[in-house]
Image 1: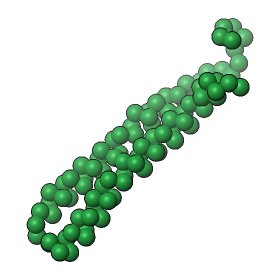
Image 2: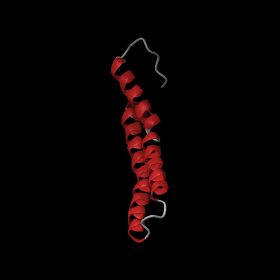
Image 3: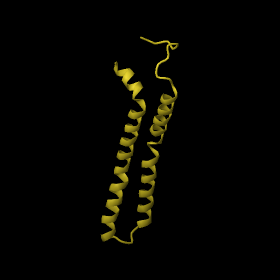
Image 4: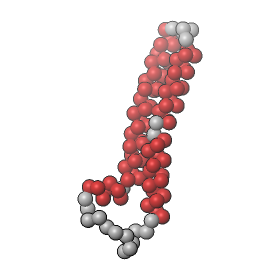
Length: 95
């Protein structure tokens, strides 16, 4: 089986894995920001906690919205793959 055919056959799983990697990479920034904010709150308690919290919330929102497109594409590919017949003698092959 060629690499192209393997990618087409496992496209939904590949996109799902990419979406999980994007989510994990996107969560690094808000978690580090939240940890820095909690460390900074001990020494500087009243200096702008609402701004830091708002920025952290925006980072979490961005982290969860970035992988939406790969998740949706994986869902569409999986649904199409389940609806399509496994072998169709009438389809033209490109070999």
